[in-house]
Length: 252
Image (spheres, rainbow, N blue to C red):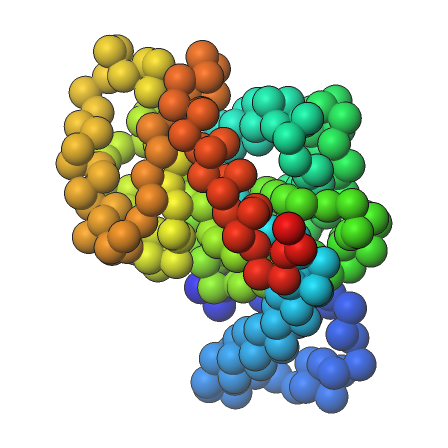
């Protein structure tokens, strides 16, 4: 969790300054980092519930996309947005530590996008997402994609109010990723196994990878896709369409 990764001080400056001033200046006593972390998470979860209530009220289906850097999740998102353009009204919240490169790519699809730069922070939190939502017309939105910072550790701990976490894993990363990052894969309901077009060039064992994912997340829904060739993407789109139809609070 973020106790060790250095994003925690950053975390304390998101919006709720006044709550922290009384605790900040004191030198930390043993165990205080845990207390601060618990405090941060409980505040986050309260805000996540607010986001969730808003999504439900507006009938919006929200996904939190997580992965390592380089898994191809922005490319999957670009292709998805282009292909669903006429079927669903989408918006994107784009999380990145420094650049807006991905947001620029998403904007080129014509879909509304809100960039969040986290600086040293290695994940998005519910407050940032709630704030970003103010940019969108929620009455004209079916599907919200939140692309999280490329990192399989910290985003696992932070509920953003989404309906599902979707983990993107490329076949270049090794079959044992789910066992190396069990918290994240356990938190994910859906896995996109990306870059299957290059399988012939790799020693990647697809079945072993799926078995490991199911070991930490029984019932995880797995789509084998290539964002480059489009292979397997229709099954993913079908799932998205069904989920949007069944989204809590949705008026058919």
